Length: 614
View 1: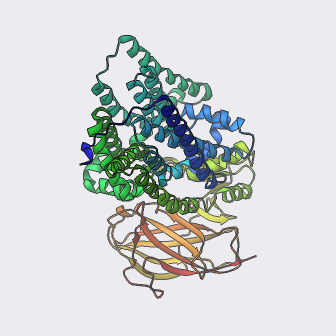
View 2: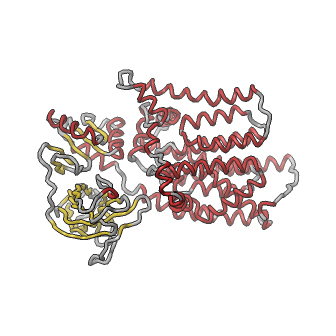
View 3: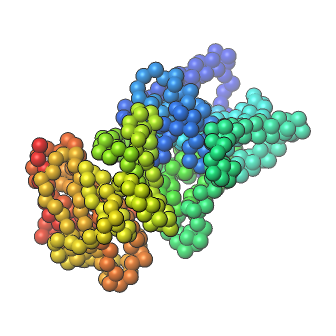
């Protein structure tokens, strides 16, 4: 059995040890450069959406990021964005993520070598981490996860250095403190790493414990940055500071009750959608073998890593945020280490270390070939042109209300490029105060726009140059085309309005869809609207859940929704087909029509055509 392998390696002379160290340094540098180059070549070229846009401009201006504030990231990002002498601020912060993630990849190789894993298996494990889809996506845009994973890897290296007597425990404490200040995902590593320290049974004197505790607490000082940057006259200043620092908003997505109702389905969903595909199912199977091997070879470290992995997985099963896969990244770091252990064990068993190690490189190379297309597709529709057009189209002194995904890139343009600073940009307004806010603005004769129409507002909304202007008139929710079609799970359409144009490339098409429930749907679905040419190439797209989730619709209830379908600026003149449909998120499983339409494609319905001119 692989778990019974015990190989005694010959004592190396000083010359051999120096050669090994030189090879390790060379491979670590090569892995850093290789992963960095792959990230930079596929980098988000400019402005991102939502959190990414916020992380692109706030560090440069020393502002305050959304909870948990990320003061360590902000200060490092400030230095990086000012010292890098070329590229836009957005691009520089994207590169910052790439450099941090490349450092984590290089550190994962060092971790494997600390466990006496041969160079090629260690390289295969590191590259499998580097080219996993989640790792790659977080390395190519301004995000906090590159730095978080680098600190996680640094903590593991510090623990192994402490075990071998080459580092003091205070270094471990420092990485814990920095990790907690930067991103609270570090918490889920601590139960397993605490077990590792206990099982090592090393004598810990009070002086060493005190130094470790002090090093852990010291990074909390970075949070002094927050009261420094939040204005003293800010309403409820200290309450807001507390909410930012503690990340209290996390509770809205942490739902053990929903986990209890879903049971094993939730765990199956995580493995099917994220954990299995991240390193392929073959890679995951090898990682599980590596876990068992490490438990036998090194019970303290093996047990610690296993407990940490389970802790991460347990949290993610009960955390129902839309991008839950990124919270699995520390688990992928552990899995990459297990993968290297398994490949090394197989190589030793076969007595073909170089051959098996080289063969194992096929796994990360396969991941690279598959995921590079996904990453390029991820950034195929840049947001820059759209938000610039909205700001330029707004009347002087206007208010633009929109989703966080688009208000943040607007604020980047206003803050960094000084574009249309006269326009007030506001995030979506809570339903309980929306009517009062819109009424107040309209009473003040302010010009108010929405980025997307809101069917629940008792005000008329008219499309003007890509923005939906809100006026005090009564809303018109009637449709011009009557048509009945049913999807599975009790969703039907009974009509729509689709002005045929002509439109110019870059303009938006106002679309009105009248939905009706034949009974209560079982799940929450998302609507898609696609603008396609004759070759089925997409030239415009809208994906949006209805204002009222489908799983609370009742039989016979009607819902008229307004949509704004933006035509890509590079769209050539011609006629284009508009198709609509439903799907589940995040699985992207389509909801099928009960009867196949004339074109035979049962997951979408053609509702008409539009004309695009020069």
